[in-house]
Length: 289
Image 1: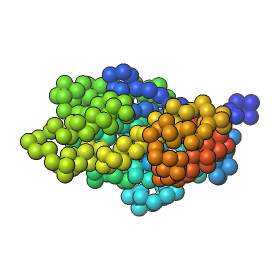
Image 2 (image 1 turned 90 degrees about the vertical axis):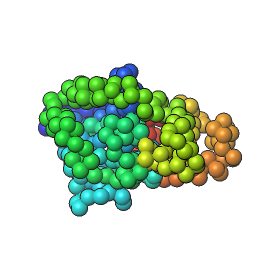
Image 3 (image 1 turned 180 degrees about the vertical axis):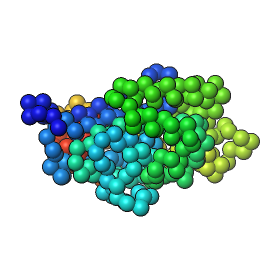
Image 4 (image 1 turned 120 degrees about the horizontal axis):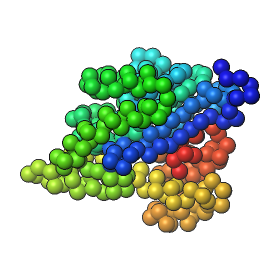
C-alpha cells in the first residue's frame, strides 16, 4: 500500500490513441487505475458505460471486476482477468469491490472480424472469457499483457502483436477502416459492394457480421458521439443549449435528441452532464467526450 503522503487525490484514468498504423483497427486504449488513491466509496466503484459499436478486451491487472448488470455470459459475477466484450446495444454497469487496475483495448468490430474471422453478430451484448473467443496466439499475448511490469510495456506488446497482422489485412484490402464517422459510412458502401448480390437483406447481413449491429443503430451511435465531442467544452462548463445541440446534430427536435441519448447512456442529456461532472462512476464519459 502507498504511504499516506503518496496517496493520489483521484484515480488515474488515461485515454491513449494507438500508433497511426493501427488507427483503423484500434479505436483507443483506456487505462483505469485506482490502486494508488484512497479507497473510493462503493457507489464510486461502479463503472458506467454507454452502448457502443466497439468491441473490447478488458485485462484486470490488479484487483477484481464484477458484473453489476445484465448480459454477461459468465457463471459468476466475478469477471476473469482477461475478458472479451462484444458490441453493446444498451448501457452497462460493472463494479470493483476494491482498488483496481484495468487495461482496456477498444477495437472497431469490423477490424476484429478481419483479424480473426469471428462474426460480431453472435457476440452482440456478450462478455466472455478471452480464451473462449480467440486462438492460442491471442492467449499468449494476453498472458504477456497480464504479466507485464507497466502499461507502457503492455502498449508495446499489444502494438507489436497487432501491427504485422493488421498490415496483412490492410494489404488484402477487405476491411472497412477509418475513424468512427468514416468507418460507419464506409461500412455500408463496403457491404453493398461485396459479393455478387447486393440486396438490402444481404447488405444488412454483412454489416451485422462485421459490426454486430444494424446500420441504423451504428449511425445513431455515431451521431450521438459526434454531438458530445463537438459540444465538450460547453457540456463540462454547464453552458450548453440542448435545443441548439439537437438542431446542429440533425435531430428532429430536442425530444428526439433526449430519447436517443437516454437509449445510449441510460440518462437524459441534462442528467448525463451532471453525472459527468459530479459522479466518479461516469469516468469514461469524462475522458471520452
